Length: 266
Image (cartoon, rainbow, N blue to C red; front, side, top):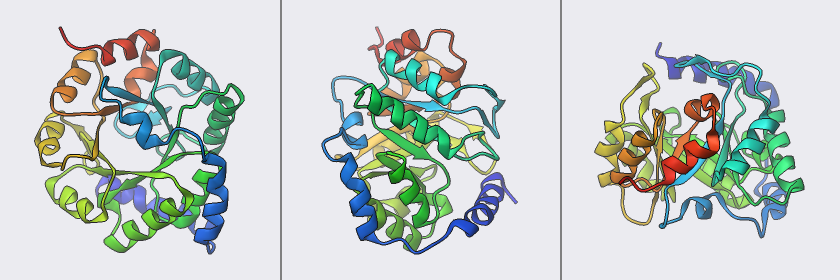
């Protein structure tokens, strides 16, 4: 069993007790609270600069422990001061050390301080109840891992996200996954440079797949962005945005790090 299969097997067991019927009307009503706020899509659609999705992540299967005792609230405060365009909050506990409470805390903090920075719930989304949880917590987007979902699941989850008025980040790693995603009319596509089967990272995956993504779709490069040079490399390949977690969690000066990643290479 590869790592993603292991994670998905656990996730289905974890989610099973929570499953209940969810209606599009229920999601639509919850989504009304997000009206008037910057959408996740709009936060990344910045042609004048490389957008940065700053991720709150305590650990991962590939990196091990990153920041075991990190406070999601403190990290959100750092990221908003550093100029992050959006934030990604891990809510998986077993493999990434995240909690739903982190998502609530981050969104409450941003609302209280009137910071219009959208968040994405970063988890292994497989059931509509997880979409509802994300909207309840104030998130503007969810992650859909294309390899982990069949076409019916992708369609169902997208319909529920649309009902709530939130965006979907479709994550792919191969050309086959790109071809699987495109019929679902994605507005945001993320190329994960990390193979979720073996957790090996290679930025050339972005360089290989981005030219095959149609115009008009926001292109996000995920994983393996460890230096400003890495950010510039994927921007040259056509990235509209990057998702950066480990490097930012470890950075001594996240504000300078984000500024460097957004800078045009001289």
